Image 1 (cartoon, one colour):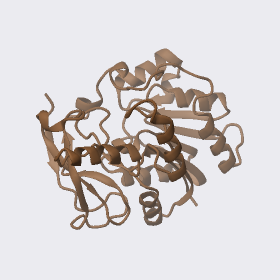
Image 2 (cartoon, helix red, strand yellow; image 1 turned 180 degrees about the vertical axis):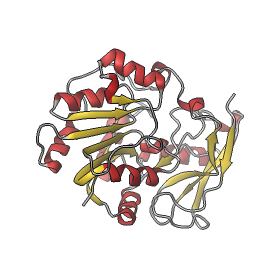
Image 3 (cartoon, one colour; image 1 turned 90 degrees about the horizontal axis):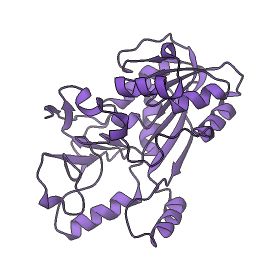
Image 4 (cartoon, helix red, strand yellow; image 1 turned 60 degrees about the vertical axis):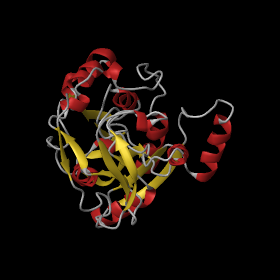
Length: 302
């Protein structure tokens, strides 16, 4: 049984706008909701949207008694993505290509992977000329990276980004793929990581998009059924997403922290909802309208 404390959110994490006037989108259950959330029981929290930058968040924010209540699980029990446990030499290749372009790459540049997981991005960056380090707070994931992919144990620290210490102005490239949505204070983590980045260095961040079309369609379906539930976020069940982001939320965060939003793009990713014959049309529409599931940003430290 998980035990939570609930903290009110007074200001937007990314732009620091007061939350008093933010829009309430609906309620989110502490379990997967399916198509009939009114038939299920559990704790609900309100889901809100910042009217200044578009960040979607829960308020109050449910915080577990121990972070291991969320992430102290075997890797096989965590991800729904098919092929997640297969390593492809081309993994992370697009991000490495962008990093090389933005950094004017030279072999031996230092990279740090925050939330290294199974170590696949670390391995790919190492094979492409980076001197790579990583940190991973889950013992199970860190062990799997060492045993499965042969990541040197002294290159992947078992710790959290809030606790680890690195020299300032040390890394050329810092990556946070599918991790920033899990931090309770994401802007604080970005600010902390930016101190470890050398001037001119690049930070890669990959997050769920607040403008994703599919949740809007599901929310509309819920509304037609007469409920006030929404499908955004999953703060109390896997994958434990606490935020959904917009490009303006990163731009305003960068403005506050003195960083530059160098590049951004949206990806549709896998479409799970809807009949198969509709999915190609949904994919095309999301590509045209930038309403795919995933937002990727590259931030530069001036």
